[in-house]
Image 1 (cartoon, rainbow, N blue to C red):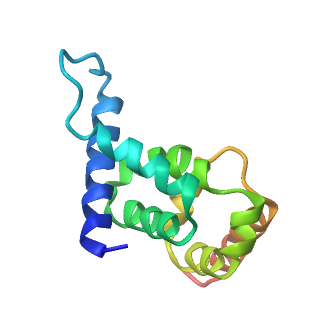
Image 2 (cartoon, helix red, strand yellow):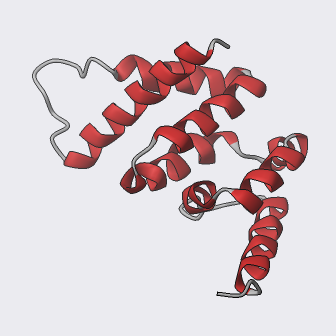
Image 3 (cartoon, rainbow, N blue to C red):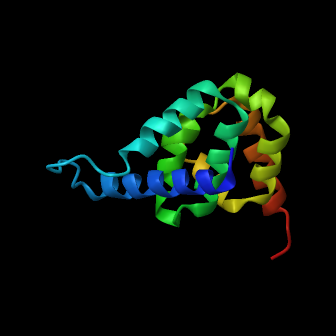
Length: 131
C-alpha cells in the first residue's frame, strides 16, 4: 500500500476522530472524512499487512490525546490472538521501543496474552533502568 495513501487515510481518520471527540457529531451534511472510517474498516477486515501499516501510521501521526481513540478503535478491531501471533515480532518490537504505541494499546480492552506479556516485560525493563 502506497505510503502517501496510508498517510492520507491516517490523517483523515484522525480528523474524524477529533470531530467525534468534540461532541458536535450531528452536522447537517456528512463529515467529509467519513470515507476514512469505511476504508479503514475494510482494510482491517480484509488484510493483515496493510492494516498493520495503517495502525503504525495512526500511532505515528496521532496527537497524544487521540492515541486512546486509535487503541479503542482500529487497533482493538484489528488485534486478535491470530493477528497477535502473526505479528508477534513486530508487536514486541513496537511495545519494547515505542512509548506512543504502549500508550495507544493501554486503552484497548481485551488484549491477547502475547501483548499483555510483552507490555509487562517492557514495563519491567523500563522500571529497572537507572534514572
